[in-house]
Length: 166
Image 1 (cartoon, rainbow, N blue to C red):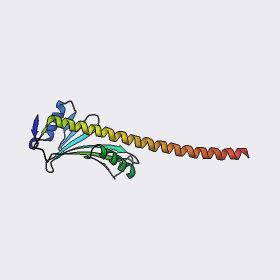
Image 2 (cartoon, helix red, strand yellow; image 1 turned 135 degrees about the vertical axis):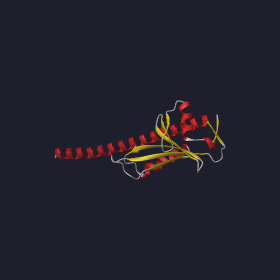
Image 3 (cartoon, helix red, strand yellow; image 1 turned 30 degrees about the vertical axis):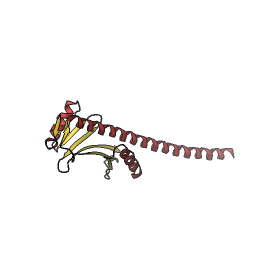
């Protein structure tokens, strides 16, 4: 079904996604709340003519170098996918990474209902990749920490061994 972009509303997007068995609800603040594989929101910005998909992930000790690596990898998958880290630390010591995907409507007079579903599915697949990369980063960090502790332990064992051999 073709939808003129002037008629595109949050309620309409939620209904369309609901028809495709995606758990979508409108909120008071003009967002569509999605509970699919990931929790996300959809915002229709009529002033700037785009649809924005947003999701967050809570991380700990995620430095700027990891963020730039994640951005680089995700931009290679889709240039419209942005990653941003919140500088404010949460009560539990973590930070939030925000994933944004903007779909430009400026050159369109209408949008297809299936196109909205496809955009949602694309965003979900990009979120899956981003989550996978974050997990890999944390696993690598953890392995490096364990290896560093193991090297320290080996040094201590060697010292003890030298002491007892004397």
